[in-house]
Length: 233
Image 1 (tube, rainbow, N blue to C red):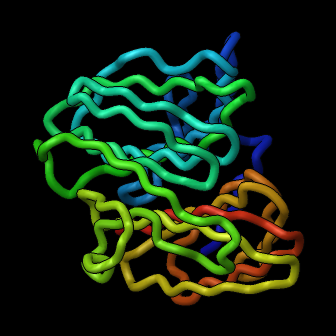
Image 2 (cartoon, one colour; image 1 turned 90 degrees about the vertical axis):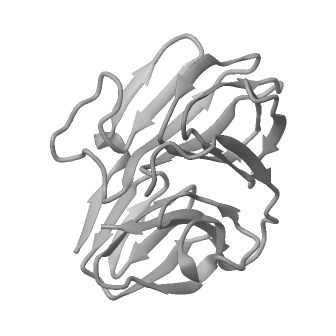
């Protein structure tokens, strides 16, 4: 089953520094039909104004992935971690037993990002944070972060969940495929451009929920960068 979620149907929140759209219920946006997809609980499409950001706040028992589309974000936490993650790269935070963090846009331009929350397989793990550069321009999908057993030996950032975050670029007319095992689901968002997913058309920043599909074929009808999260359904 392929369910298209057009960008203009997403939940929305805006203040003087944050312009956010919610693929799933979050904050003041609540839709019983959009509570998550398997272990994927949050996918926020955020734009953070220059010189602003998320002040220190706590989390626990959640895997939080940030994919930077434009600009950069600077992370600080109570474990002493600090680092800058820029466009095309990804950071992973393991909230575990508890972590307090801040995310600031210290750039001179808006930072645009996807904030993705995945429920962990185990509670009360050791908290932590990491970031990694993944080169743009590679065609097809690359695993950026994963807790799937099949990816244990890869260079992907580790997740405490049987899930994976993938991203990549496709030239216009190019196709990529991935397989979903029984009991697995995926959520796909084109950063830009346009794609078809098993024949269903999706524009930039639309969401595509995928379940009960063995083979998923993605074709770029316009040059695109896309992000996919694959999870236990």
